[in-house]
Image 1 (cartoon, rainbow, N blue to C red):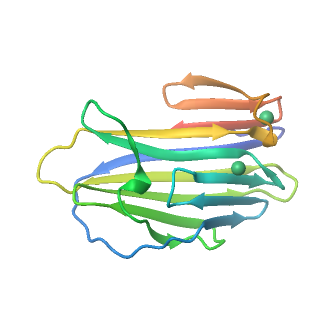
Image 2 (image 1 turned 90 degrees about the vertical axis):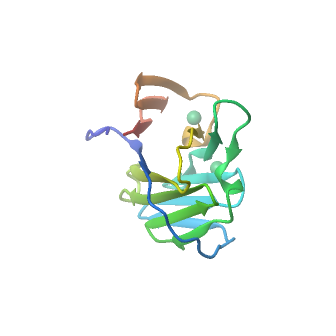
Length: 185
Ligand SMILES: [Ca+2]
Ligand SMILES: [Ca+2]
């Protein structure tokens, strides 16, 4: 993670785990979803590829789109995870935490979000994102998961710079004061 007294930052932590545990499908919820904490607001449309489309920090939205696609098998097109099923939604509603679950006969995808905003005016905001995928079949699944992210730091898309700083970290900056790190582990 990026930490420093003069570093204004958005930090996104992603964790991906694979499990082989069967589960039970449950009901769906079609409402737009919000997370809020201190200076930060997240908005997610769980029913379309719009996915997460707002990460507002101290009044500025820094995100255009962040969402997941998957493919089973080595070839063919990818599908967004909202095509697996209607989402099962827990949490959200302006709280800090929320969980989305998509499930069909072959797999279950669970995404847990945890937003930790900063003090008003700090421009600090952390979002934890944990993905758990369960193979519900008796055999193996050749699963490919893709996470697409399109940040517009400070609300301006043209002046951002991004680089892969390690196999598990992307750094995106707008000037020197607005930094986002995407860490996958
Ligand atoms: Ca947006
Ligand atoms: Ca920008």
